[in-house]
Image 1 (cartoon, rainbow, N blue to C red):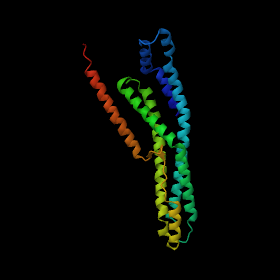
Image 2: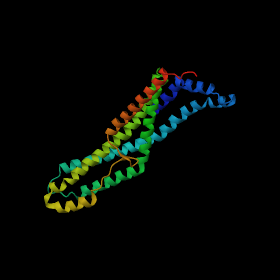
Image 3: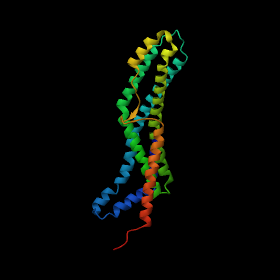
Image 4: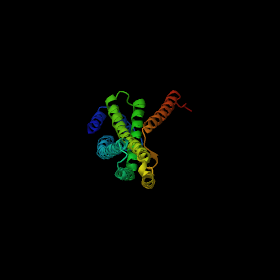
Amino acid sequence: MFGLSFIYIISYFYSSEGLVFKKYIINSQYASQEVKQFFIFVPEILNVTTPLLSALLFISLTGYYGFVCFYVKFLFNRIEEKIKHLRKDCSCTSIIHTYVELTIVLKSLDDSFSFSAFVIVLSSLAGLFYVNFGIHFNCIADVLHFLAAEIWFSIFVCMVILSASTANSASLAAKEAIYSLPGKIPQYYYKLEVLIRSDCMRDVSLTLWKIYKIDQSLILSALGTLMTYGMLLATMGNSVKSDPPQAQ
């Protein structure tokens, strides 16, 4: 990930995107020459500091979030496997308590990181939109620069959505397995029913800022939204180019 960040920074200085910003600042009619000389270095400074700071922040957040999600998924899968191979004379109270503790961990993770996950996904999708917008309108020849940015933002989106969606799926599968326990052990049917209804009924899942439950279809929805707005802006841009304003 840091390698992609450095590739993006270095390729910026060889791309035409930086030249576009410099040309815009130099040709600006709303600033004096001294102000232009000061602000002409702002794009380079932002281009170096923004990827590095976002790398330090986002990589640590997504790395920790993804690790916890995959570990919780592994534990939920273990519970499901245990219930599948459970013997009728075994006690399953410990399995239920383990499931309840895992749901508490999952809820704590969502309480702590749902907003961070929302910010990472939203900013990465905005970055993907900006990159594709730049490819279409500005710098088609700067392949390496935009390819690094495309991979960079895509990894963040996939890391958050895929890890959280697998944890949610494993949690749901373990919950269904817990619900099947009274039928597997009929001699403890009523005791298990009371225990399950008292401790295992609430729905716990990872969300984006408590607004949207994360599942794998979110990737397709996000890509569809990007394509829709991209085609809309491309159509508007082509219509503006083909119909220039008439002189009065």
